Amino acid sequence: MRESDLYPALKAFLEAQGYVVKAEIGACDILAIRGEAPPIVVEMKLSFSLALIMQGIARQSLFDHVYLAVPVSGEKGWKLRYRDIIALCRRLGLGLLAVTREAVEPHLDPAPYAPRKNTTRANALLKEFHRRVGDPNQGGTTGIKRMTAYRQDALRCGAGLWAGPLKASILAKATEVHRARTILHDDHYGWFQRVERGVYALTDKGRADLASATADLAALGLTLD
Image (cartoon, rainbow, N blue to C red; front, side):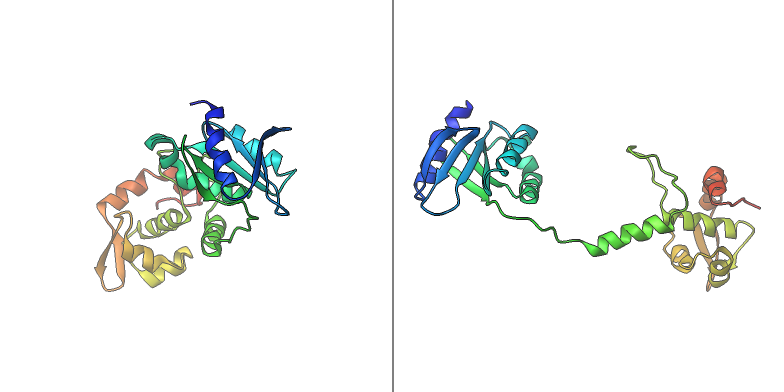
């Protein structure tokens, strides 16, 4: 398929809605006008790409209603990236048309975009930022364990139990980890065990993991005494 093969279906689609359609008007692949309605620009490419997005953004400096038109590709193209493609076009205020040789399927109309903030998630990220001590992770790495504020608090709890069992309430005050009781009870890392009501101790795994985490403990100003 060539890019020009997309034009007949797009022209027929727009003409069926009452538009007068002309190709290659200046830098626009397609310009369509219907009475007093705002003009429509359609930019065509054989795949969804950065070049197509940049073309669409450039046309937005001329007209408000700009569509990107691409053929529907296979499982590894369009379908695999469909949600991301729609989200990006919506964010940029661009419309999206899927084209075959015979038909056009509209997927998104151009419209101003005002993203709705996810305040719950944003607040969780800010809380993690302020709770985390230092900057223990290397940006851009993958496939490795991350140091989180939760893990740092668990390390504090572990160091506090190194000398022996303690009540959760006493440990919380000694370590200044206010969620110590929850961390001990949930035992996310397999480090803690309840020896009696409200009293916790380290497991063998906890002692082993803490003994090998001296650098992380040192970053928190902690040692195993």
